[in-house]
Image: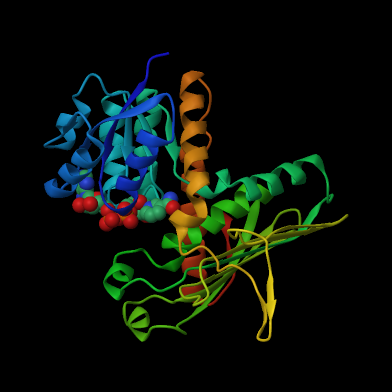
Length: 338
Ligand SMILES: NC(=O)c1ccc[n+]([C@@H]2O[C@H](COP(=O)([O-])OP(=O)(O)OC[C@H]3O[C@@H](n4cnc5c(N)ncnc54)[C@H](O)[C@@H]3O)[C@@H](O)[C@H]2O)c1
């Protein structure tokens, strides 16, 4: 089978990591070249992985006839434009989350994808974590009957700098977006309303930048089920990622992942291995699984992508509803957005 050739746009934190995964961990695909606005970054990645080339511009990358897939890992404000450009060039697209911070820009990008008949996958990697995928599988088998309450706890180890927060779109679009997508993944798309709460508990500079660092959202589904999502920008004990679904006939619990399950008991108490440091350590296998699913889907042409552009839009819409709810201090019904 022909190897899929990828042009990577953006060689920052996640872009360079994706290159490593594609080159070393995923079969059926290889990186042909890299473009970054910062040429030294692109060159460093090309050198490190001995890739065929850097590109001088997005146009040059998209004009490369050998390229089948464009992987967009540039800063968020570039995604929608680059999706439109890649679609017009007839390339298949893998885009990091979020597609954009604004729904109008997302709609334009999705219209271009549709018009040019290409496929778009949005990088909600947590869907490919084996624990959360198992929760989903068990829910689908009816193991706990109807879902009543979903709880998602998602805490970062340390807050980002205020400069980052200023352009992030706020905690709901920047951080909770993963959990909002997870709520859709596990309980489905039929969210009726959201009520969001938030406060500044960690870094006053985050408050000055117009955001909160400790956030809760309650999603109410048409079925009556409710999802409670809790985010914190700071957990000194590590990257805390847990999910529980309480249902009619039982409960499903996906606990944190640790290196091993050995508990040491001594005079000071009982001790377990520390939590993963951050997302690369915790979700490494999920990122690999995501690329494998992407490659497999592309090889069966005509199949819908594992995470569609519409999924990407829906998560941003939920995040927008949360942002509005916090700002206006009220429950926001999703029908306000149609
Ligand atoms: N799925 C995940 O778990 C996950 C994790 C981290 C980041 N992300 C997303 O990935 C994207 C990148 O995040 P990051 O942490 O790597 O940021 P980063 O700042 O480390 O990297 C972004 C890179 O994009 C480059 N860039 C800017 N404009 C460009 C353009 N027009 N064309 C090409 N490159 C351009 C910058 O020079 C930089 O190297 C963001 O949208 C972020 O939300 C997703």
